[in-house]
Length: 120
Image 1 (tube, one colour):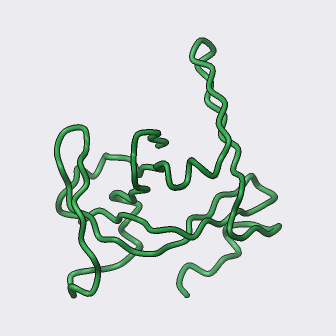
Image 2 (tube, one colour):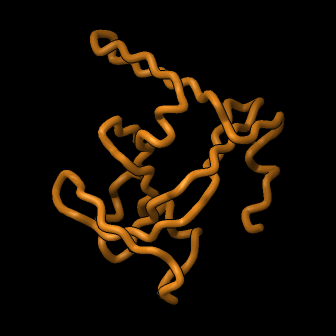
Image 3 (tube, rainbow, N blue to C red):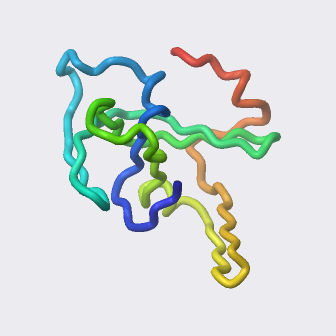
């Protein structure tokens, strides 16, 4: 979900499940205010990949990864301003249309996201 009012890009359950276990205390914790209440997150450096089927664009950034026990599992992950500010958006409220064009990646290449190893 795109949130133009969010100061962070947040990865929520179930998207956070493949990230791993952070119970060892080695990560930084932050609290972010949400619509219904505040929630705790781990802060990690990560790379988000997006593809249009031909070109893969990667963005290295700080991610807020939800503590699995603190959020409703139905909440979508949020793409916030740190990433949105690098993209172009066109919004037509009368036509119920939002178009996002990924721009200014840190890395880009021709290929498929499926070709990228899941663990480094």
